[in-house]
Structures are given as structure tokens and as C-alpha cells.
Image (cartoon, rainbow, N blue to C red; front, side, top):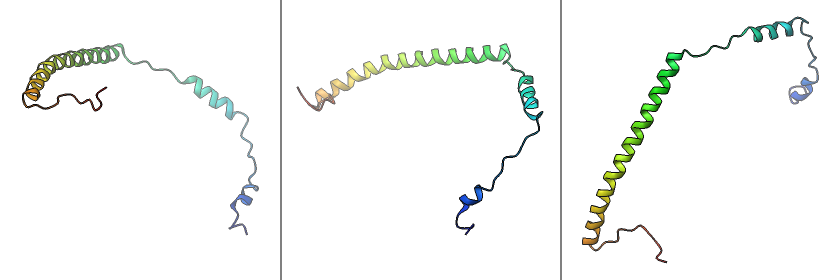
Length: 93
């Protein structure tokens, strides 16, 4: 019957008393932990590289936008010459 109902086995579990000084030792170890800060050079290098990448992305996106405008105009002219619809609009309202 015990094999079929493992919940009955749980009722036999008893609470174990911990030594009284255990909690104070755990608290002391937590309080002894030192918060280590990252070195200034590392933080400065990471922030600088992030800013460089951000500005590089903005510059490249800006250049690709301007070059796409010229390509879009050429594509629109080609599509009009071929009597094709350049717009992706599905409904004309």
C-alpha cells in the first residue's frame, strides 16, 4: 500500500532542529561579502566602444537611407516604363 501512495510517506517526515549558531554564521558570511566594483578603465572602455558602435550604426543607416532614395527613384522610373504598378497598396480608397 505504501508503494501505491507516496503521499502517506510524506506524513512520516519530521522537522529537524538546526544548531542555534547556524543562522548567525550564515548572516555573518553574507555581511562579510564585499561588493566588487569594475575597474574604471574597463567601464570607460566599454562605454566608449558602445558609443562608437552606436554612432557608426547611425552613420551607416543614414548613408543607406540616402542611397536607397536614389535607388527607389530609379526603380520607380523603371516600373513606370514597364507599365507596372510600383505601389504595394492593395486597396484604392
